[in-house]
Amino acid sequence: MKRLHVAFIIVGIVILLATTGWGLLYLYASQDSVPDGTTAGDVQIGGLGTKQALDKLDEAWDDFEQMQVRISLNDTAENSRQWTLRELGFTVRRDETRDKILELNEGSLAEKMSYRYRFPRQIPVQLSEDSKMLEKTIRSQWGWLEYNEPVNARRSFTAWDQIVYEPHQDGHRLELNKLFSQLSKWASQAIEGQADHRQFVLQVAAVHPPVTLDRLKQQGVERKISSFSTDFARSSEGRAYNVTSTAKILNDWELAPGEIFDYSKVISAAQEHYGFREAPVIVNGRVVPGIGGGICQVSSTLYNAALLAGLDIVERRNHSKAVPYLPMGRDATFAEGYLNFRFRNSTEHHMVIRTEVSNRTLTVKLFGTMPKATRYIIETKLVKTIQPPVREIVSSSAGRGGRVVLKQGTVGYIVEVYRTRMEHDKKTERELISTDTYPALPTIVGVSRKTDVKPDEDPFTSPDGLLPDQGANPIVEDGLLLPEKQ
Image: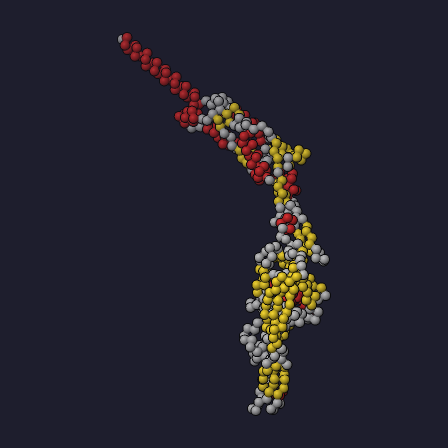
């Protein structure tokens, strides 16, 4: 009996302990409060009811977002402004922390017990950062500083061949990325209660244009180093137009050290911007109507300026007929797709080509660097005179058994061109630049024939309308095209 009594007491104690333990666990899991010792950021919320904790956090977060920071421009106190963190795009990501706290009251009893047991005592608070809002806010105050775009330095030339430099103008850019990075780091510390100062500096960076004054001057365009002029007073209106248009394109053409000038690029640009008009061109040594006549006067004038500057000639051919505006051997022809004019800027500095057209005189000037004691002399030497051959063709003009000169031929020439370098007016070097041949054109003689004479042939064209020996695709010098047949 006594043993049974003891057993009942033990069972009662066990039931009491179990009931008490279960009750305590139930109370632990069901309590509507944040575990003791918990902080979110730098806000103590441990022991508070979940609603009290959330209200306290909202109040603290509102205060944080309304916290003002001072930003000064280029570290000048007189040019500064205060904004709240919210105005600068920094806000608290509240939902994550709120959801973590509310989850204390969610799930089964076992889940609540486990979650509360594992609940972190230090809840990190995350920030939402909007760089676009920061840019908008800052630019509303100082955005006007960015309105000025960088402007390149300029080089111009006076009518007296003086070089004038205009300095570049810097643009300005607000260094917003740096400011945003500083504020982001500070705000992350501030939400944890680890930041003190609230002053920041917005730097304004100078933005240099691609061409600064120093860079432009370093190109070494110091003075006029050569100049040459040719006259086109007797040219037709079409030819004068072609010369002038091509010279406009060539004006201010720049060459870097070692760069090769390509005249075909000038012709392509002139054709695109201005087009060419009808004017005489040269085909097989004869002057005929064509399109673009006169373009070789520009290349020939430039050729002489290049020779006088001591530059290396890469590609150049003389015309098949001597031109009236230059001595023989001093011309440079152009035939699209066949003949080009090219030279190299063989100096160690940049070079600028300048052109002027006044009173039907074309002047080409080269500006760059060349010792003032250095100059060049160009000489032409006649090597040989070529007498014109005679070509006979059947012509009714000769009469039966007769002969008549239909076209007097022209004499041809072979010439050599030399360039002499002068240093302090003393000859230091003489070089052969070119040996050029200007073919003689035949004298055309009409003769009769014993049989019936056919209708006169044109002594200067073949039956297909081309000049003799041209073939189907004649090379047009000093122009681009022959006029279309009507």
